[in-house]
Length: 229
Image (cartoon, helix red, strand yellow):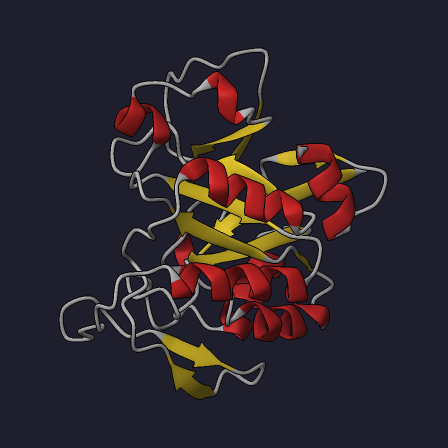
């Protein structure tokens, strides 16, 4: 069956995202756009995944637990997990390895933790949009150790893309899937990789519409991860 997806969406927990990116708004917009599966991948944390998953249940949209991790090399990595618990565990690791810099909401934006009713229940004080001190290889290993898959994010972009940062996709990292941006044009793909196209949405209107799809036997986080591996 066709699984229409967007595996790179930010909630209002990411300081660079709009405050309208609440659990119900994300789930509702994804449903309106005809998506079967989404992933909310906030910067270096997983604290809004549980509430987004609960909100998406009423719309029948599958939520794949995810995080956008930033490595010590300043490379963004999209990590997808089979369960909320494994994503949250990875999120705690990443948070611990962020520099001890406090967020300035007036400069960077709010970092709100929300419940499934779109109510603020907390916030993260440490600035999330910094690089951790964990290298790419170790982030990938930690994600895979938890049953997840690690994907080099938006490789067509200059900012935080692995190609622009390192000059190439190192063979020793053994990536199976790479992500390109929804607005990428004329990007040359290599046959040895699978590719996914995501929105990296920070505002509701940027969430992908029913365009990109995977052919799956069943639409579950486990089947999606198995396909991407």
